[in-house]
Image 1: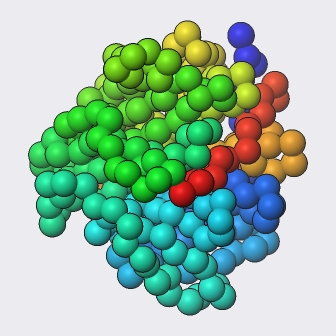
Image 2 (image 1 turned 60 degrees about the horizontal axis):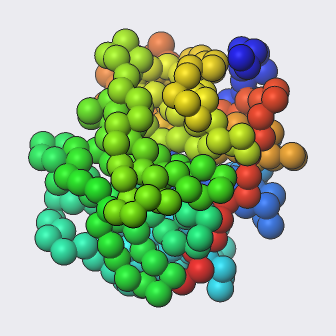
Length: 297
C-alpha cells in the first residue's frame, strides 16, 4: 500500500485555463507541455513555473505529442494534424494528415498520447456532449487511421502499461475505464474499473514505471492511484474541483503535474476556487514516470 501523498502540492502556474489538458514532459527540453482546449493554445513551463510560454492555436486542440522526425502531431477540431512551434506567442500553423470517416462538424479530438510502439492514439467526442459519437483511434507509423473502440460519449485517457501490452481507455460520462489487451488476438477490451458518483468523473490519466494508473477526477477534487489490479492505492486532494489530467516529469520523473479547468464553474464556485485552471505539481514518493514516447510517423 502506498502512503498518502500531496503534502507539498503547489500551484506552479495559475494559467486560468478554461480546459487545461494533455500534459506531457519533454526530457529533451526539461519542460512540461500541455494545452488549453477551449482558449485554444499550447503552453510550456518548467518544474517551478518560471517559464510561461504560450502558442495560440487556430482551432481547438485536445492533445499533442512529439514526433521522432521533429515537430508534433496533435488532435484538433478538424482532425489530426502535424505542426511545429515557433517563437512563443506565434500562432500555430496546421498541416492536416487524417480525419475519421463520419466525422461531423460538432466532433473534435479530445485526449491522446503515443504508445511505446510509436503509434499515436487519440479519442474523439461530440463537443456538445449530446451524442455518443466518440471513438478511440490509432494512427500508425505509416499514417493509417484505425478505429479501436466506440461509440463513446467522452473519450479520455488513454494510458499504457510500460511494456505496451495494455491500453487504458476512459469514457468519462460512463465513469468507466476500459482495458485493452493488445497481446490478445482481436485486441480484447473490457471494463477495468467503474467508479461511483461520489468519485466524480475519471478524466485524463498516466501510468508510472510499475504500471500503476494515476487518474484525474473531474468534479472529484482529486487524483487517484490504482494498482494494475484495479486496487485503490492513494489519493491526492486538490483545491480545485476539476482536475483534468496528469503526467510525471521533472528530475527523476518523480513529480506529478496536474492540469485543471475553470470552464462551467459559476462565479460563486470560481470565488471559492481561485486556483481553478491552474497547473499543479506534487512530489511523489515511491513512484516515477517513464519518458513519453514519440510518434514515429
